[in-house]
Each structure stands twice: as C-alpha cells, then as structure tokens.
Length: 355
Image 1 (cartoon, rainbow, N blue to C red):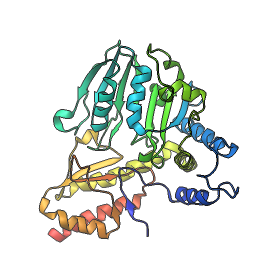
Image 2 (cartoon, rainbow, N blue to C red):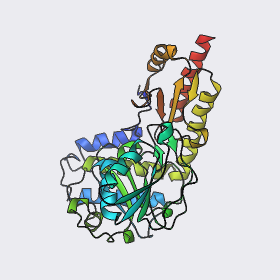
Image 3 (cartoon, rainbow, N blue to C red):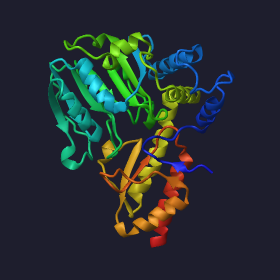
Image 4 (tube, rainbow, N blue to C red):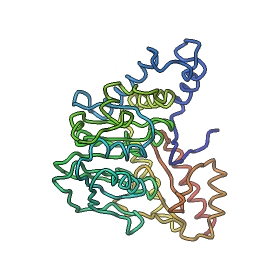
C-alpha cells in the first residue's frame, strides 16, 4: 500500500499521473520508443510542450490576455536571478516572508537597488507582514505567496501600480486568485505540479525589454518566449508529467474544485492541532498555509512515541524543515483527504495514550 506522502517537495503526485508517466517511459504514444528517448524536436514532444503551456494559462484564466507560459530549468532558485536580470533597471521592492524570499533578495541585489518593504525575519518568519508601502517608482514588487519552511501563506496581495512578481512555487494551482493582477509568476514544478526538473514561468510579455543591460541568451525571457520554451533541450520528462498533472486538475474541475478540497484538508488538520493539548501551531493563525501546516509537540519527551506511531501508520515526510524543527504536513493538491484523516487519527491516539 502506498504511504501517506506529506513531503514538502518533491511532492506527491496523482496515482493516475504516475501510471501514465510510467507507461510513457517504456512506450510513448505507441511509437515503441521511451518518452526519454525521443527527440525534443519531434512532433510528439512539441505537442506535449504546447499542451502543457496552454493548460497552465487556461487553468489560471490567462488565455488571450497577453501572457506567455514557459517551462524552463533551474528551479525557483534560478528565477531569483532571472527576474532581476530581465526586470530590474534601477530599483525593485521585495517583501521578505521566508527563506526563499530572502534568497531572492540576495540574488536581486547584484542588479540594482533593493527596497525591503517589510520582513518577518524578526520572528523567524512566523507571520506575514501587513501595512507596508511599495515605492511607486519601483520597477517591480516581488513577493512569495507561500512559505514552505515556516508554513505561512499570503491571503491577500497588495494593490500597486508597479509590476507584481510572485514566487508561487508551493501553492500554484491550489486556490483561486485574480491571476491577471500578476505580471510574472514563477513556480518550481516539484512542489505542486510535477517532478523536479522543470520551472513554470507565466509572464506578461509587455513588461520585457525595458532594462538597459545585455542579458545572456539562456537568462533572457524573450528568447525563451520566441523559441516556445525550446531554446535549449527542455526537461522532457518533467514537462510531460506536469502536463499530465495539469490535465488531471482540469478534469477534476480545475482550481475552484481543488481549492474546496484543499480547504477541507487544512481545516481538518488545523482543527486537531488547536484542539489537541499535545500539539501547538507555530505561525500566526490568520497567516496559516493551506499547503504546509507546521506544528510542534507541547511535550518534547513524546517525540519518539509520536514518531513511531505515525511511521507505523504509513505516514511519510512530516518532519519539519531542519531550520525550524517540529513537524510539517504538506497537503498539496494530490494528497487525498483520507491521508490527512490518518494523521489526525494518530494525533488523537497519542492523546488517548497519555490520558
């Protein structure tokens, strides 16, 4: 029986997607060739890439609105650099809400002046700052929608007259938003969409071409747009599995459907964390992530007992990030509700055992 996979990334994927991908590794499109053997220039894979890009725009409601979808490589970490390379001319504004936002700031500082409009670093990123001001002369404002490490999530996004850029690596396609508010969205596939190796970039094309510096070809969004994500050999397998996952989501009913499921999963777990005296959440309640629930034991001496119980229940991947400790349950789109119920049952069993 497959384990209950709460891993923060690479993420759980739908079983039917895994089955389709496994078959394609042996024989893709009944061509008697493996998916990972075919040319990325073949008609078969070009069709995959086109479908993946179209599905991404369709699910986000950004078709025919001046946006382009790209599947690149290097993860969100390379996007920290590419965003600034392509957009930062004189000054950019950044909201620092966690480890990944902090890394994005470090990379962007190489290209111009940065204004850190607010930060939650003072409390180990356990909340989302509010009430900050974005300079009206900034080239863009950058934020991270979901913090996988601490377990916080932006519930609202600022109204601003500058380009809005967002790292949505760990909650993209999980909830309904007005995605047209954003000028650039990027997300590593391995958090909620596919395997490691591909990075989705959604970009409004008219924000490009405004910086004065020369941009190396591999880091130039416009070149990747002009080449339909085929400027260099793409990560064929990662793009294919992402395409399957996006199709799976569309067939379910898209983002409106999965948001409802995700809210049920999060409510189930957070209710138990708040009810059970043996557990405690570690972030501000109003900023709790729907994707990544972080919590600790109120009695650390129970750690070995609890760890043994959830392991025996077939649960995997709930140890907290090394910088935070405690526990982290990542409830991405493909995680079924019954997996969350299994974790809640173990938490209740630990409480009964201590009564």
